[in-house]
Length: 506
Image (cartoon, rainbow, N blue to C red):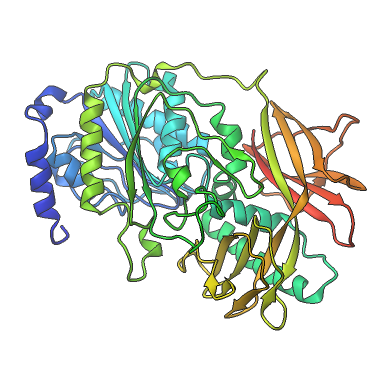
């Protein structure tokens, strides 16, 4: 146990409501769900498993146990390969169909987590659960809740999330846009920088898994969120805001800045925001949303480099979690009491900007920007507006690659430390996508273009496939996968095409 943790656990145990453990009667449980790329074992409620809940919950698990909660963690790992389980002798272990793939599809993991709750019901007598989740674990928990028929008889009393990308992650958005742009441009310096950044973006996808990265984008979450519904139960959110570019708040929406290095404040708190084109990013609608605060914390230990601690160990945050589960115990309306909504008749409207590529010059400059541009570069490369740095929303820690949202700058921008590649937003036009079940309708807003094409890239497929578009701009989305990546290629003034991209839930 870490130094100081014993005192924290003791304090939380004293703060726990009297009789909590007795009131549970052995049938109420907290299920702790880790997120993206985590590798955590199954742990039972046995006292011998305290502190064994995996790399994510080494502080939170013992604190919840000390507060009188019966704690379980599901088996999780990349590729669905979790570490060895922890359980007392004679306690049952979960079957393989409950294993979560922390590089995998959101609803497949929701299915596995729902099966895990059913396992707790059948083998441990659990009749009510509360989810405490970090990062993607909160999304997987929401998916499990909407699949509540798989664990009929178990009431979900609350959901508490830490750094969960309820509307997506700006890192995934940037990676999706860079990988969708073609490096076949006429400027040789830009083409060379593009190939380098494209290799780094490919590395990010290889390390994280293309499915998990794609399904973290704001466009995917917009189409996925509309298909989710939770009952009138408390949903408590926590955000980290350790990293922020030194720009005015109005210049970069809170979806991007500040954030914990992976997830922006608005997304973690399940709040409405805007994308870089000024279009709305609509948050999921929770009937009882509890904002448990924003803290000087980073998303995960990978991003630590002598600065603030993570969301997972700060005493104030751990106390908020204990309070959230105490609040959940008093709930009367379960999270899994709402019917799953349908998309039919309720098209999802998306607006995505067109972009062109531009590398910094040999002198280390970029032209002025009206705002809404992406900037990608190797670690430690900084872009400044005058003397003021305006990159840095993503700290060193993500392997090799930094992705930042640039604010408006009326001066020539300086780029130091290497070559950077900007995805410049076309301020004169944007693509509008209306998604209705398996059909997408594409139209161009703003200045006219000479022509445009709609292309799709399916998971694990090489290259892009052109879709047939009818006279009304409608195309049918490719099937056979959990999502589809769309790219709209427009030709207008200038030699190089413009690209707009979106990831659509299937």
